[in-house]
Amino acid sequence: MERLAPLYAQHIHTLRQRTDRLLVQHQCPGLVIDSGQALPIFLDDLDYPFKVNPHFKHWVPLVDTPHCFLIVKPGEKPTLLFYRPVDFWHKVPPVPNAFWTEQVELVVYERLEQLAELIPAGYSYIGAHPERAAALSVGETNPKGLIDALHFGRSIKSDYEIACLREANRLATLGHVAAKQAFLAGESEFAIQQAYLSASLHGENDVPYGNIVALNEHAAILHYTQLGRRAPAQSRSFLIDAGAGFHGYAADITRTYAFEPNGGFAELVAAMDQQQQAIKAQIRPGIRYTELHLQMHQRVAELLLQFRLAQGSVEALIASGITQAFFPHGLGHPIGLQVHDVAGFMDDESGTHVAPPAGVTLRCTRMLEAGMVLTIEPGLYVIDSLLKALPASAQAMLLPEQIDWLRPYGGIRIEDGVVVLAEGIDDLTRCQRWDD
Ligand code: GLY
Ligand code: MN
Ligand code: MN
Image (cartoon, rainbow, N blue to C red; front, side, top):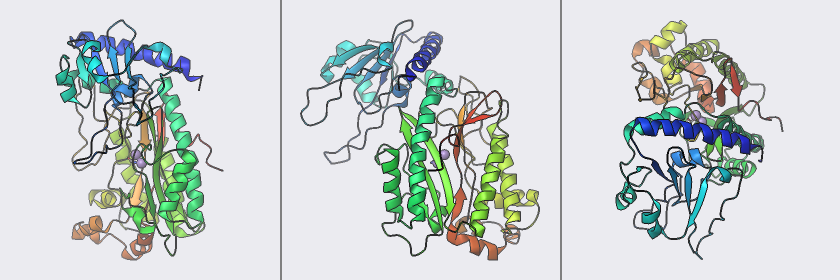
């Protein structure tokens, strides 16, 4: 994607300016950002899949190369120490030559022992391996004040980052379309997952989080990551929460489908879809994410009343904890280099924490600003353990017959990723082609 070159150049320019300012402010001579290394499996000679340090991939789109270091010094082009060992067991990565390489000083090194000479003394180390930092003569490791400020800065995405997030959504959409077809063909969860991975061009270790591929009652298990090898006798419903990555940026998309296009469950899915779109229409700079979440509880209460799952007033369904039992997770979260991106609770660069109101489950309490990227993912599930735990007065408001009807379908979640604009949103998920 050659068109990324100017966007990336601008991204690095902004990142360098921000980092230079923060280095001065935090009296830090420079940064050594470690790409990381694969973690060994206990008592084994195998490693867990390598996951790159998000701070590293913020600067360079290298997601599968351990032992690389980015050295950032104020006023200078960043230096990339690129590890290229002599190794006949593994594939040795080629020396990078891409749209981004002009923006860094590339130093290829062969042996880890060279690091002692290559890494400047006294710079702060940012990475997951403090033992490695200790062996080098670096300064502080992951200084909290600086990390908080860097995290806060990640909240507003550059145009390059939004292009990467849009492409991640495109790849994920290819998988979602294939998965829906596999569901309608009556395939097992395992077969649907294979269809997803193949169409989205991802391996199981490349997706940004473990896909949730849930048929029927399994849709009510929020983090269902088992995969049934056998197709159920009857497929009624399908919830798929599956993402994709592009240059280290994540998509996180959920869709729910009814097998029967004209039944009550299809109507409930359509009604939730409308509510999800309606809450997205509320997004604008200057509104707190918490407010959107609380509004969503009202909408869930309306759905419960409309579909005769509970009775009473919207206010009573919320106050009694009934909406929380049907919708027990947050409305969504920031997304970017990480699926649950950093700084969801920060009010400023110094890391001031804004907690959710008591009893509210949320990963984000931010005041929204243009350039933030968030997910919007309301849900409604039959989770018996939560319904049973409701006080008797709340249980009296439930309508068991209709809950019994819904239970075999599990539940619904609909999730899109959106960019906050000065006015309205750029919907990274719905702007894709969903109709193939
Ligand atoms: N897939 C994880 C989430 O939706 O937050
Ligand atoms: Mn999500
Ligand atoms: Mn998700």
